[in-house]
Length: 388
Ligand SMILES: *[C@@H]1O[C@H](CO)[C@@H](O)[C@H](O)[C@H]1NC(C)=O
Ligand SMILES: *[C@@H]1O[C@H](CO)[C@@H](O)[C@H](O)[C@H]1NC(C)=O
Ligand SMILES: *[C@@H]1O[C@H](CO)[C@@H](O)[C@H](O)[C@H]1NC(C)=O
Ligand SMILES: *[C@@H]1O[C@H](CO)[C@@H](O)[C@H](O)[C@H]1NC(C)=O
Image (cartoon, rainbow, N blue to C red; front, side, top):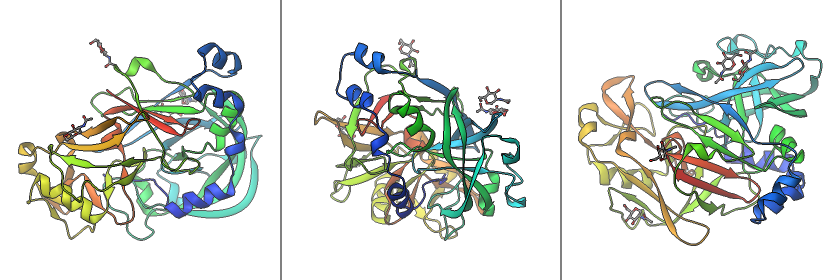
């Protein structure tokens, strides 16, 4: 599934330029990131961690995990994907005409705290929803800026910048959720407000496969009941950028690697996408180590496939190598069970494979994240992983 909700890199960069959030990170968070005694952190902490249950958008493959926030006064539930690949909050509203008819729409006329900021903008995503690759601007939202109260996991943030979707391209109509809550590596919106109120500046994701369920987002804390073993942390290579990425010195497939796969690359972690996007040469080097029968699927540029009947026999363990904070290597491992993302609509005996070629982006999403409990530590600009 290539359902990626990552806006183009340029967009992320421009959002970052528009909204400077660094000064919103309070001193208390700095204390915590310095391994200070727990008591000290607790004394400064005004808000306790909160949990948001997540539902899995599942179409034979796990596509996205989404949960409710509430917006306005009195609060209206708005379901959103918590998307580490974007920065802002946008959702369907009654300002949106028939293009949002398959989503629940936020009725701004019923909120006493709603403020219309009137400016309009648009976002084009380079990853979409579902299993179709993004072509041109087929994932595009038109937006109107506003402000309202946003509550997440019961924690209230007032005067949060929101964007009402005023129209959207057809590709969004399969979404069972109404919008996207950006959770980039620089806190913005409700999260910046909660950090200001004393919430520790990190969040965690437990995005499980459909058969397991119980997925959750925790803001401000780590839910130790969800994993055994220790978290391995790796520092972001570009602290201060909005992008959640880590440097990967090498990739191995079924225990083997090649000189191309041993080249260092920064890999983006996008909770809003199910698939993997790698440059064409990396994609083809990985597939060559799995099976020469994996071929580009011409009808959908960027996708690859193989006869579905061959999938069960193919070992396809992909180890993404990283280096932890202490200089020790560790792998994030994608098991063979992730190889197929399901049959192509136009060729049902051919199964689409998990990596799409997309030059200019190296990005992983749900197919990696659902095998780990993940910590997104904004305050310390690092990510942590523990196998589940
Ligand atoms: C979100 O809230 C709606 C009602 O507004 C409810 O039906 C749905 O189950 C909730 N979704 C999740 C993931 O909690
Ligand atoms: C809103 O969503 C929350 C969390 O999913 C749920 O517990 C609650 O029942 C929903 N509220 C309404 C009014 O449906
Ligand atoms: C942790 O390990 C214990 C003992 O093996 C097991 O009962 C429990 O289910 C595990 N918890 C998780 C979250 O994997
Ligand atoms: C990562 O995976 C590769 C390939 O399977 C393996 O050779 C290497 O030892 C692993 N590294 C660690 C730290 O486990």
